[in-house]
Image (cartoon, rainbow, N blue to C red):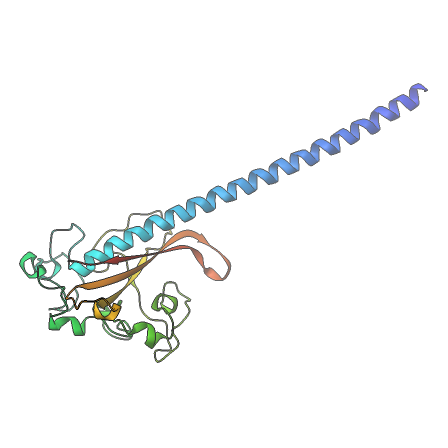
Length: 236
């Protein structure tokens, strides 16, 4: 092999190695980007889940008529506490009242939950649904609720997206989160024991709370990463 041919062989070999190293570098970069996206997605879901859990606890305080401190009753609170209150008589006013408030025998219970969740009504009656809400909605209520700006609507006799409640609305709980984060939301469905076919007949009431927490990322169509949680709560 002549020296000229030898130099040509080294050049070709070097170019091949350079191409291989470049491809390996590109593959490594793509792998890093993919892992970074996975980590970001995990963070988004973890954040959304945490916010949904906050909304579940906030909904329980809403049911109990409590300020976010867990001790002050909004119905008897002074100025500056629980700025927006549920209608008078729809929540316990004090600890003594709370003992026998959430029982099926209380006549006030008939007017608290509505099939349409207070759609079109005053802000302080919205987000509480009766046992017949799913039938009126034509689907599970949470499937036709206004969780985001663009939401699927109920079918049935309602034919619209039914209202949800933003975290802290009735408890004044502060939402401390990074800028651009959307507060979580919840709805509450009220059931008597006979609505659930529980026998023997009981005065016990049950609340199914559905909460949705959101991440910070906005995807196609403006939708955000979200996590939906449900819990069943009974004050007694």
